[in-house]
Image (cartoon, rainbow, N blue to C red; front, side, top):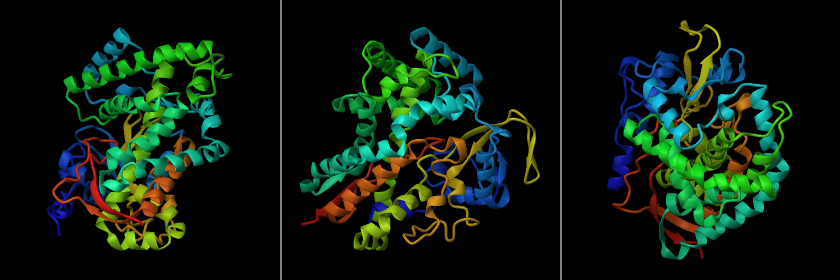
Length: 431
């Protein structure tokens, strides 16, 4: 066993009671699953004393929250999920002074506004369009892996997991491939702000980075108004929304550029592609089984990665009225933290939930993409990216292992998302 394996397998924080849980603690976030289990068993509806959020951790309870949009609303402002409202006001002022204050994204809207906005994306993310993109995803996956296959080593996160989905969504948005690392810097800043782990100075930096992105894309937006093309961004800029009797304004466009396209269109896939190879490095029996019959096991493997290492650990709803669950009254207006990653390891729904099981029959019933009307619109594309990403790995790699002394296997501090910082592997190419 290497030092890396010892570090990864070291005992995580195991709270004995809800009073000991702090989901904003960096060490808890490194392996939150014991805390999630304790909450599922002892406090399935838990009021977080730090944030004030009501955290839902059981599978069936979370399904209820996601499906009942009348009782559990998505219509909220960013301030609803900010602990420091005065600081939030200062950030809002910065947006207004130097750029555009982002409007609510899809995740923060209820029908009919949600439906009207979501219809904009249907053209790009419908099944037929995803089928058209499939060849591009396949070609790119093999091109990326072939760029380092002869080296015998790579940082899987930086050299594959990040560029694959980001280049694909970038093409849909009319961005140049050579600009993806600048776009990645902007999306990382946005993700860090979403994650609620920043000081005020760090959050100001995130806002400044988003403002940079706004001013990068604003001339492109203006050009597309004059000269529409067949990109997704052109559709966002020019499509008339009948329910609103207008097209999207700048505040809405810049919000969609970041939240629902570059972040939404890449972050889940990047984090799952990273986590999948990490899981296989820890479970070589599953690696051997996957290699033995990729056609049989690849789809289930992708679903198991999404279930076990949820790229989105949790998001938010708001109680539209007083609601009682498990003897706890959630007052009207309270923020509800929908902890998808906790529900995805609920033994009430998944047998032996902490195990990677390539024969699991209900693997696809996980909630990694949400459920109901807010089910992730990019889920079909993400699944194709995972399929071709892992398929290229299996096809090109004979065997692999964690690079000795080069991995800490740490995740970015983030309340909402789970992103592996780096994954250095060594391998023998398949002949």
